[in-house]
Image (cartoon, rainbow, N blue to C red; front, side, top):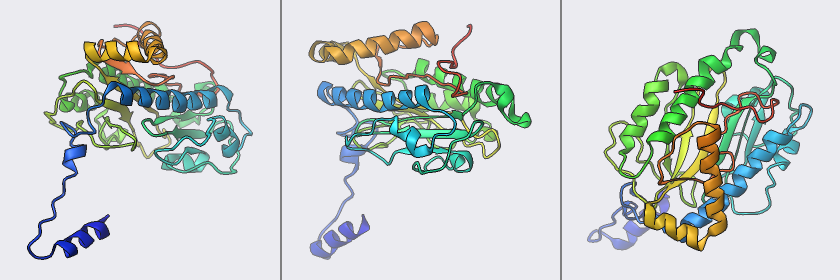
Length: 306
C-alpha cells in the first residue's frame, strides 16, 4: 500500500532512498517465492486436493432448485485459510464470474460458474446447468463446437507444452493460436505462478523469454470472456514442475501425495488423452476435467484422436 511506502519515505528524509524490492521475492524468473522446495509443494498439493475435491463435490451433487448457498455448501468450506473469497453464481450474475453465492435459486438451463481456493490453490469451472445441448437456447446449441472444443484444445496444448526450460511466451503462443481471436475474449495471462496468494506473478505473456524451472507451482488459468450468450467455459487447476531429484524427494517424503499425483497423471493420459512430460505434477482432483453440461454427470471433454 502506498501509505506504507510514503511513511518510509518521510522517515528516510531527503538523503534516504526507498527502493521497491518486490522482485527479490516475486520476480517470475528467479524470485525467492517463485521456486519451491518439496515441503512447500506438498503443502500446495494438499491445498489443491481439498479445494478441487470441493468443486468435484458440487459437480456431482448440484441440482436445479438449490440456492447458490446450498450448492456452495457442497464445497466443504471448513475454515482452512482462503486465498480469495469463494465464488458460485448462476443465471444473470454468472457472467461477472466473481460473485459469492447468495440465496438465488439455481434453475435448469442457467449458466453457472464457481471457484474455491485456499493458500496454495485455486480451482474453477464454468458451464451450463443442463444435460444436453438441446436444452440450451436455440442460438447457442453449438456451444461445445464453437467455444468449449477449441478452448479444450488450447488447454491440451498448454498441458502438453508446459515443462522445465519452456519459455512462458511459448505457452502464450500455444493458447493464442487456438483461441486468440477476439471473439474468445482471452485477455489475462493464460497461466501464472501461485503461492499462498492466488496470483503471485506470471512468466506467461507474449514473447516472454522467461524459462520455467523445477520447483515452480503454476496454474493453468485460461478465461474466455465472450460477452455473449455463449457465456464462458473454464478450467483453473494447479501443477508443479519437478525435475527427477525433486520428484524422488516428494515421492519418498510424501508418499500419499505422490500416489495422488500418479493417479492424476494416469487419468489425464489414459482417460483424457493428454500427453504430459514427466516433470508435470497435477495437483487437482479434477485435472483438466471439463464438463460443458453439469447435469450430465461424469461427461467431459477428451482428446478423441490425434
